[in-house]
Length: 271
Length: 271
Image (cartoon, rainbow over all chains, first blue to last red; front, side, top):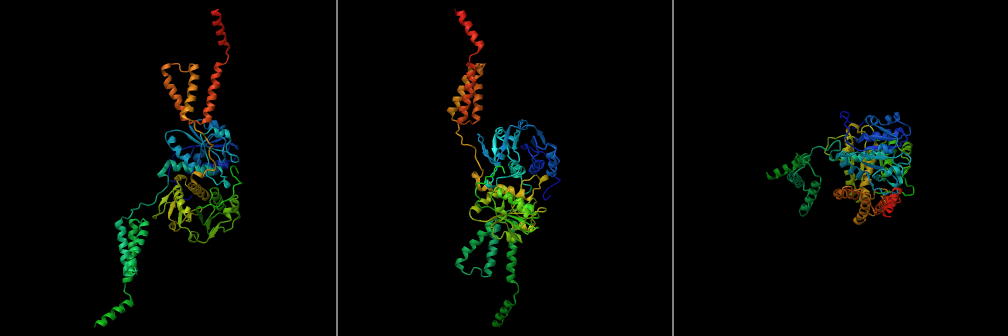
C-alpha cells in the first residue's frame, strides 16, 4: 500500500478507547478497526454485536489491522464497556434534549490529551448503523461530539466517523511530530544573498536596455525586488537563479555576426 | 440516513476544488464525491480517468451526491485541470526530494480560508489508487499536504483522504458555526444559588449527625462545596438538587414508630 512503512514496529501508544454500541455488520467493525489503526488507536470495545464475535468479515475488512481485531473486548452492556473510563464522549448526528455540552472532534481531541497523558482512560461511543446512540447511552457520557457535516448530506458511516475522531486524536496527541515526514532542510537566503542576485539581474537588464525610461527604473526595480523577496528563496535557489541570469547575460555577450560586422565597420572607418 | 436533513436546500458555497489524477475505479470517484458532499464541497475535477466518464459506478457510489457528480469536469492533463487555480496543494503519503513545504490538513485548511473568501481559486490534488501523484504533479503545486498517519498503517483510500481534507475545510471555513447543532441554552448558577444549596444540604446533614467530629466539619464542608462548585451547575440543576436534599431531609422528619414510643416514654415519666 502506497506509503506504508512495514519496517516500523508496532507500539501501542496511549489513546482513547473506541466503543461501538450494537454494531450490526461485521464489515463495519472491521473498517472501523482499520480506521483506528491508521491513526495509532488500538483499544476497541463492542457492545452486544448483532452478529456476535469473533467475526471473519470484521477481520477481513480490517485489512491487516489484526492488532486491533485481536484486542477487541466484547460486552453485554454499555455500562460494562465504559466501567473503567473516567471520561466518555458520545458521538451523534442528532441534537438531544439534555444538558450536555456539544463540541467538535477537534475540541474533543484537544481536551483528551492532558487527561490521557495523566493516565486517565477516555472513551468515545459510536452508535448503531441505522439510528446511532439512544438517549440513555448519551446520558452516560460527559459530552456530545458531533461532526461539522453539511446538514443536507449528514450521513457518515461508522468507519468514517471513527476515522475523523482518530485523525483528530493523532493530530492533537502528537502535535508537531504527527506528520510522517517533513520538508527538506532549507537554508533561507539572507538579504545580502538576495540583493546580490538583484544587482546581478539589474546589471544584466541594463545591458539590454530593459529599463527604457530612466525615470521609471527605480519603481520597476522595486517591483522586481518585491516579487523575489516574496518568493522566500533559499540559498540554493539564489545560486540557481544567479546561474540563470549569468547564462542569459552571457548569451548577449557571445559573438554575434551582425555585431562583429559593425565592429569591422567602425574599425574600417577609423583607418 | 440518520441525521440528514432533507429539508435544507442545497447551496454551493465557496471551497477548494478536489482534483483526482488518473483515478482508476469509478467507485472511488463516487465515494470521494460523497465525502466532498458530506462537508459542503462540490467542485470535483478528474484527470484522464482510467475507465472514462461518465460512470454509472461513480454515480451509484456517490449515494445521492448527484450535485457533485453532475458538475464533474474532466481534463486530459493536470496542467489543464489546475489552470484557473491560484493555489494548489498536493496530497501525498511519501516524502519527495524537492523544496516544498510539508503541512498537515489542518494547517492547509486554515491557510486556504482567507484566499478563498477573497475570491481566489484553490485546489487539492489526490493521486492514483496505487501510487499517488508523480513528482511532476507535486512540483506543479505550492505545498505538500500529508496526513498524520501511523507509519505502520499509512494506507488510506482516496475517499478517506478527501474526507479528512473536506472535514478540515469545513471546520476552518465555518468556524464556530460549523457544528449542525449546539447544546441547550443554559443559565449558569450564581454563587448565591450554589451557597444556598450548600447551606441547605449542610443543615440537613447536621440534623442526621453526619459531621460526627465537630473539628472536622469545616474541611468536610469545604470538600463538599468544592465538588459541587466543580460541577458548574446551572440554575435548573440547583433547583433539582435542592429538591433532592429536601426530599431526603423530610424523610428523616416523618413519623417513626420507634421515635414515637420514646416520646410516650418521656411523657409517661413526666406524669
